[in-house]
Length: 264
Length: 315
Image (cartoon, rainbow over all chains, first blue to last red):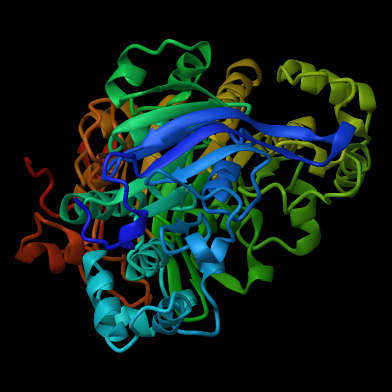
């Protein structure tokens, strides 16, 4: 169970944390409209980790942008704890969702220390800033990093460390959900494994809900509760890692499974 | 040995005072695929750049030599190097988005590259080459511009350009790391096909031992500028000796769906001279002798070398 508080009037006890209903997105207008997502449906309960798998260009990142209101929805509904929030401004939902991007070094201000960037995050979301430093230290420690590293600049850290810092930055504002967009794709395998370990610990300690977008089926199967396979803007299969890996139904899932290069 | 295509002997490369590669030696026979694995910053890419020539990058080869097909290419002049690049050594970089001009057709860029290597560009040869590599709609490909292509296709166009010049040795620097799994598998299969059909030698740099296990004949593992383990792929993967190789293997998500095991800490990056093994600060098996025994790559099993002072530790 998450320790994160949300306003009481939003709470609908039985509703899932996130519900996506008939979601569609197309870019362009009229005849030139290019559909990117068509008719997506899924729910996500509190404390659950959903992996979204698909190859480049299938609409994984667009889906995250829609969930976090960074892009307007063309059709369909988004519900947070049973409340429809479709069409809201990103500023009003960023308390619920924090997005972690693939290239975190680019997501940090290169001329500010990591700590200054994190403080700004806290300030923007109008939380209590009096205990900002303690909060930052707590989250940095939680991600297994030395608190001294927070006073450095992004370029002074390794890729894996910056990525862990950006997760810590997402967590200081106490979101209900983390949206992770290919967060380990730019890292080497050892750094990737470190990130997964800390995210796993985070789940155990805080029960954090996550949407984990990746193109690596093997990676998601180690750590997600459910996996959704996306192909050309549609979810073609959704199930537990066991179901997906041992008993794939859709042709595309079989193709993806076949492409995973395990160590022989 | 005269029959080695590439020989790297005792190579040491420095950026200023910073030693990025220390005493690396290995050799490649014609038709062999050698993979070099290791984490970011361990000197894998610098190794490839040393073969390509790195004077312009501000790095210097201070010791050792590189021998390609019996000829010492360690310190060639720019003009001499130009003669062998492309025609004898092909190179596929990690990010081919950056190596093609996004708004000019492949046709123009292929022509330009071939001309700069004193080769004649024949369009039908290029199309034959695409066919051989099983590219879709091969006759139209040259008229496209890179921005119209997916990352995977762009990467394959770079491979085709290298193939077209018919080098003896291909150097692939993380050629599949930016691709998603499906295109990664296709590119790997194409490279393996090239070797089988044309008898090419490929030096393949990767951090993913899963990729290496599907393509390589030999595997070298580098850590902080040193080669810590080298040998036949089956021998290294089935029976890894150096603790670092084991941790690298444990970091790859496996079929058992267990959480992969990470490695805390960072390699020594300050270029300081370390007496003994430089993996000691992160090693769980180290003993006193590990920090005193000078670095050497010893043959533990025939054809399988490792630099661990303890020879073989049982987990």
